[in-house]
Length: 121
Image (cartoon, rainbow, N blue to C red):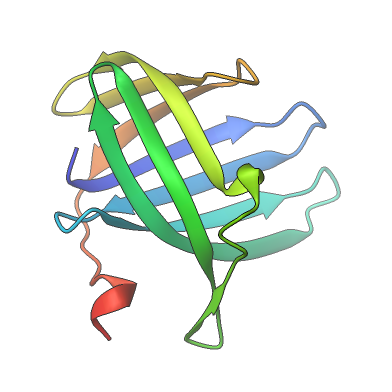
């Protein structure tokens, strides 16, 4: 799982969402989201947090987001910041998983890139 995973999927509202998830060996992650509206408006967002796997469950703990190269911390008591996903398929190049609560499916492919943990700065 360590490495970078890219997905490009339409959203239920007709937008396009590109995601690059950098899962680091220290258990932290940096995820870059690029959303393009139906009108072509682009927004970018970068999240940071922790990730892990237990059995066939992939989980993430959202810790905050990066604004102007500074990590802005999220409220740790917010249950929205904790997610669990059932792993459908995991190979060296393919990662398919479904959100346990919402049923949303995600499909990602391994790409070559690397990022430094935001917690080591």
